[in-house]
Image (cartoon, rainbow, N blue to C red; front, top):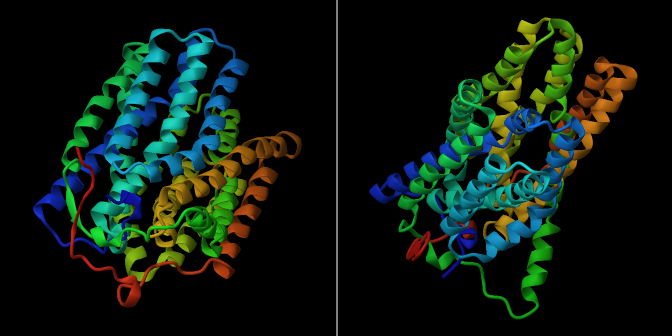
Length: 427
């Protein structure tokens, strides 16, 4: 039985099974986004209410970040090795349940640190599992449209989750947020049920069997692929420039308006609305016109946003500028798994390659926040935004002059046959 990530099928013709599985994946993306919202800013609020110092909170969050970074590549390799991706997804969600309950029941440092580690590791298995299931359902030539739907439902889930958990924290307690997070894992598991017995065409598209020692050579060949390496560099520069922007603008608005909570909430919700509205069109554009044009569209938004943040002081305009982040997030979020599937879907190392790109993204995000904070503290936020804008321009130039088109051809040797049936998951 071939692994899901090893299959390289074409776009699927409409069918009842296809529609049911697609709707199941839609709902799964929505509920997973609900769950992940609980592990965001609510952790800092909750731990503060438990008399944790800011230093201790920062240490806990850093442990989670480091765990996620260190797990990216090994988690991808594990997902590649597991033939049943729905079980990987279900196990990841159950680990989220345990992590949320550890926060809620007994928030002592040992349990909090362990919960952060578990959440970081399971996040690194869940993302590749979702991408692999998407590849099976949609096929390589329909992957862009499928990822657009994933992004739309995830954005809706983020918005709904933020509203539910914000209300829960406001009117019940901060602790109740994590009980709600644990409860939301149940509908996520139910959403996986339609995917268990979903059958698709393409069993003959498994990667060629390797002699002992050849698998490692194939793995190294994939990671040394020029397209993948260039895309890793593009992704790292993009994340480096993007990650600190909301943090910096939050500090700027705090100095101007005092309590910027509603303003920051608007800066988070508006991009999610844009992602939900734009993602299907972005996926369609990637399938029709190619990946580079979508990358350019998303990457150009980044230096433009940085330049506007460096010059604009009006709170209303700050919120409006965040709409550009929605466009960039839709483009980048869809392109990461899509380009990796173009490069590595038939190699048997799709999820490992996805982890490789995720590791590059993690490096960019980890280095950028302290670097931008240091620039802002010593030279002012305007110069910090200018520096991030410069990095964003470098990312655009790298895409423009170095990143090749990766969209697969629909005919010739790249068009796989569809003569057999392969189950997405088996009992």
